[in-house]
Length: 248
Image 1: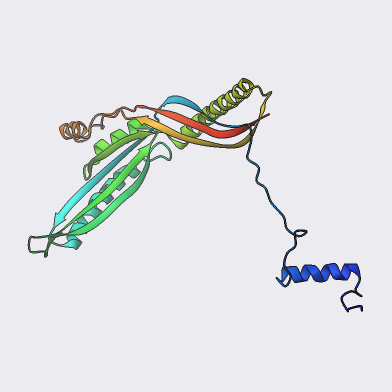
Image 2: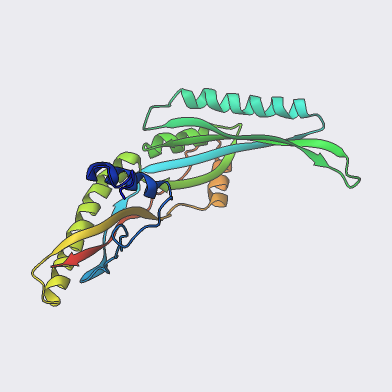
């Protein structure tokens, strides 16, 4: 006895079976099951190489600040604003993009509490940051500003210098990675290799060389408009290449 299903064409039967399987109406048979096997990579080696170059630091950053105390918050804020405005006026006279950039830093105002836990005054700080590649211009300006005191001096690499050096050091690190990969492959009896994955990371390690903060502040006190004595150090730009290769 023929059923309605048996009288259907093969194409129609296949379509109905697929719909039933996708809807979970029929159990999957071995004909429809798949066993996916993950093969373990063979003849893969992980390695690392490094390139480095020591260069002269070409970026100077000097922060200058002022701290004020008073019984009234508005008075303290006005004093800080006056000190910062005067410093900005002096700085803008000699500012030059890339050579001497000027920007304001932290500005804070907070209450001071007595032993009884009540507010008995206010204290605030303001900051001005001088940064650029013209060390002489920056240090001279820092010596002329008399409404703020020297806070911190630091050296580093400008974006242009870092980009130029990183390009050179990256090429060096990549060449060493390729040489090492070829040597290791040959050592294991393979003719060559192909790269599976690789990452490139850059950093610089600075060596700070400048007079200490106390000595610089003492030098400024001796001569109000004398340039702040500074001396840059050197930075070592390092690029590390890590990855794995398939020996073949």
